[in-house]
Length: 126
Image (tube, rainbow, N blue to C red; front, top):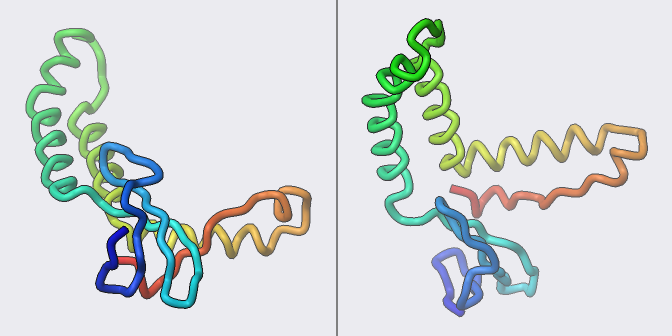
């Protein structure tokens, strides 16, 4: 594996791969084992290009398929694009993860004790 600037040692191969990122097994200098999500280089540019292309052709294709439809295709595409770009913001993902953990810790029912999620390491999230 490789050592990264944060002092973590990453596995040589990813544990999981997706279109926008990969997850590696990592270990810290004190032996803590964790998962590290790494964004693929160029992911934001690729998503922005995809959204721009869909924005260009989407409304026309919708009107051809549904001539009497009243969908605001551009608004729908813009909302979709915004959420897709949000998926690339790992700081937002960290905050959402922390909020989720807090909400689950406050539950006093079976779901609160059954649901588990990884704890984000704030100083390693960017």
